[in-house]
Image 1 (spheres, rainbow, N blue to C red):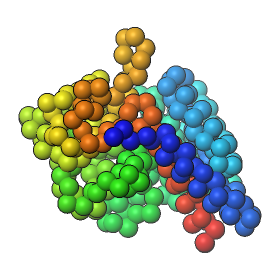
Image 2: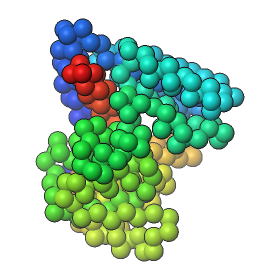
Image 3: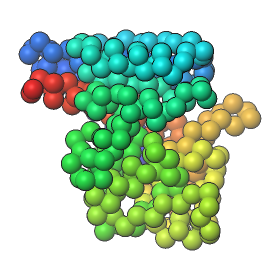
Image 4: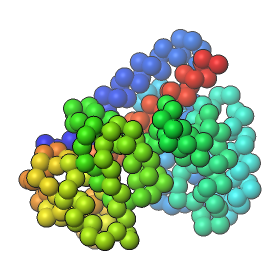
Length: 281
C-alpha cells in the first residue's frame, strides 16, 4: 500500500483551518515569520511552499529575506526582534545557512515559545523527557503518517538510517516514547543491510538515491522515505528503490508526495499550537 502523504496533509490542513477560525474569534491570528539568508534555489522553493500553506489555512505570514553576506550578529538581531513581535507566534529560519553562520547559535537564539521547527535545545530536551507538546516537523509528519494509517509502533522494530538533528535523532526519541525498539544507522555503521532487513518500520533520511534496495527490506515491512534526490534526467526520487521495494513492503511512502507535504502540514499544526499557548497565558 502506498501511503499518500499529500492527501493526508490536505486533510490535516482542513482541520487546522477550523482551529484558526476558532482562534480568530478570540482575536488571535497565528503568525509565522520565515527567515531566509542567501539565494539557495531549493530554500526559496521551501519558503514559497510554507507561505502558500499559511495562505491555505488563513494565518498571517511574513518573509524576512537577507543577503548572503548577512553576518551572524545581524541575523541574531533579526531573530531577537521577532522574539519580541507580538503578531508572530512561530519563527522559522530556513536551512541551510551560509557557512559563516552557526546553525546552533541561530536555533539557540529563537525563543522556545516561538520555535515552530522545534530545533531549540530546550524543546529537544522536552522530547527527551517526554514533556514535549510540539515536535520537529519531519519526524512529526512521519508519526502522523503511521498513526493515520493504523500502523502500530508499539512493540515494533524500527531502523532509522540517518542521524541528523533534524530527522534521525529526534525521530529515534519519538519512536522510543511510543515503545518501539529503535536502531539508528549512519555512515560508520557496519553492515547496514543487516539492521534494515530486521526492521518492521524502516525510515531512510540520508539523501542518497535508491540507497535502500529490495534485498535490504523485510517482507511486509513499512518503508518511510524521507530522502529527496534529483536524478540526472531531472526527476525526483527518494532513498528507496521504490518500484522494486513496493512489491515487498506492506506500506511505503512515495517521493514526491509522501513525507514532504506532511512536513509542511504539521508545521502549520505546530504554529497553531504555539498560538493556542499564547492564548492561554
